[in-house]
Length: 210
Image (cartoon, rainbow, N blue to C red):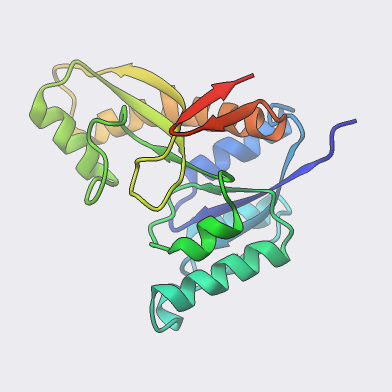
């Protein structure tokens, strides 16, 4: 019997990717993984409602209550460690943290980005900005990437990617929705399952799936 992998999901908003993970867990698609904690960077976000509806413990760690990134990062690392998290998933977590979190969870933080990294990623590329840039460039495919988080923004080893067609009449909003439905909500649970089942091996900047 596999040991259960306790997952902490970090959120800052509505929690659509959190919902995809909750639904996947209910279908038995997270392997040995179980969502044990939802941590929000601000109170009152809908993701907390999703946690409550599904009986998942939640904590609010408001960024504005901490003097700086270092103080916030320490609180974040301490909270996640105290909760016994084995895997940390960033699901629309819009708050920057420092090396204290990476050191506490080396190669154990996953993020989903709504583009095919290395395109349309890095500083400033979040939310609709990503899709606006993709449409401006005129790309024919975009998609989503799940990667391991390292201190450099969107630069960590890539776990999974999925391409999504860009249509001629797309707006940033329609493209965002299609990428969520066809890519993000599928590859994020899949990457989490691979991690929880011990199938991910990181060598340098590459992920090998066993």
